[in-house]
Amino acid sequence: MTAAKQDTRVVILAGGSGSRFWPLSRTNMPKQFLSMGESSESLIQATARRMVPLVGEQSITVVANGGLKALVRQHVPFAELIIEPEARNTAACIGLAAVASLVGADDADPVLVILPADHAVSDEVILRKAIAQGVEAARSKDVLVTIGIPPTHPHTGYGYIKRGKRLTDRAYHVDRFYEKPSLERAEKYLEQGGYYWNSGMFVWRARVILEAFREHLPEMHAGLMQIAERFKRARAAMPDREVGEIFSKFESISIDFGVLEHARNCVVIDSEPFGWNDVGSWDQWAESFKADELGNLVRGDAVVIDSKGCVVRSAGRLIAAVGLKDVVIIDSGDALLVVAREHVQDVRKVVSELKEKGRTELV
Image 1 (tube, rainbow, N blue to C red):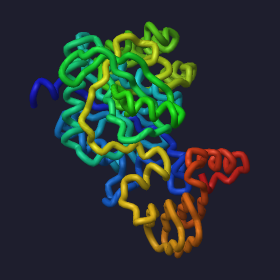
Image 2 (cartoon, helix red, strand yellow):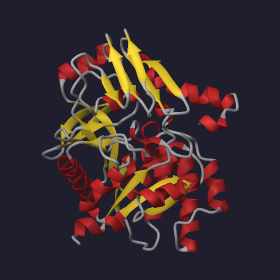
Image 3 (cartoon, helix red, strand yellow):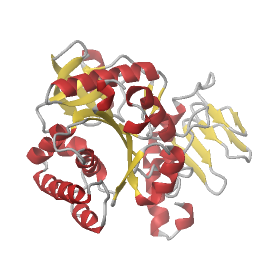
């Protein structure tokens, strides 16, 4: 194993519920454990497999809630598993992984590659190249690195990153992070150049991100230091009741809002395109496949007539769609979703409504 592999760990965040992929994604089988492409490989399996050539199986960690433990063991049996005591968003999850990575050696400061469990990638070689560039930047400087995705069109569903001064060949200081823009503003970003989609893939050394927590999320940092002492006493990263009590008090905030948008040491890697799709909705899932001449994407037993821009996925029974435009129809066998494409981000509201009505068998 090379030195690069020895001090680098891949941390896969797998605690999401995937509610925008209802009715297929459920509490006991969320999106990251589903096969969403042509192969039978689940999204989390693909995420882990892509990183094995970079760091080896022994350097991959999955962070997930306790209810998903059996699924993680089934899909990524070689990964180290860290149990997140409860869902507190990505900042707390990443902080927990950072303190866990320091267990066992006082001088440890591994480079952590943070990846969502549920993204799709078509060119794995280019992805690994971009991450390796991020690793080198994080190893040599006290920086927080994000992998930038060159935008292909004015997408309004992604956050954007504006690059600043060049640091190395493909690395730039971040000038600013921008939240999801209007179509008009997204078009301007594309026209001006120097902007990237925020992939949610990050690289940094453990002690550098913890220092960023100290500066920007001081209360969470104090709690993380308490957890670090608990891990040190136990000589292992084993969340217990004490850790859970500390963790439950953390603010529920994303790493973007809590840290990155305030930090002045952020770097973006100007990656070559690697066919990235965050598979954030049924609409984006359809982008992974080739549609017909009228923009319809059909999977399973379905007939689509005089329709345009529709996404239809059958679980077995026949679906017939006639005279529709920009409609998504997803059948899971026990539930049927019909939603306008412009409202696919609102599918999570169905899950909330079902919970309120006590329809737990469907969520």
